[in-house]
Amino acid sequence: MKKIEIRRQLFHALVGLLFVVLISFGILGKIGSQFPLSGIYFLTPLARVLLLILILGIVLILLCREYQISGINWLLDKFERSYIRQKFPGKGAFLYLLGAFIISLFLEKEGVAASMLIVSVGRLYIPSDWRRIRGD
Image (tube, rainbow, N blue to C red; front, side, top):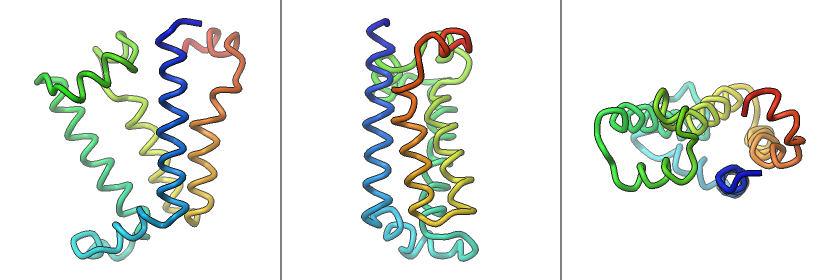
């Protein structure tokens, strides 16, 4: 297995675990219930925060396609595959957050945390032969 793939998998697991901890302890929910975000009353506090992060992510993706942003470029250099970076920088993070946001519309915070944990850590247990066939 290539060094970048090991690095990517560990990064996915750590970011996923961080999100699960933030959700489980209610930190993201508390942020979502604060004033500016509380105006979006038809979403749960967790969904509000995920929507905000998703919108900021879209802005960062658009900016990264035009400009060199040092911290973001460092992350992309270390963890993004080069062929994906050319087409859609931050694709994995965007799709991860989009999935979490959609799930947060239908499930409580425990269900969202479990789903995010399965997606982030479960990938470590998928055989590399299957990922190679699929093209990852």
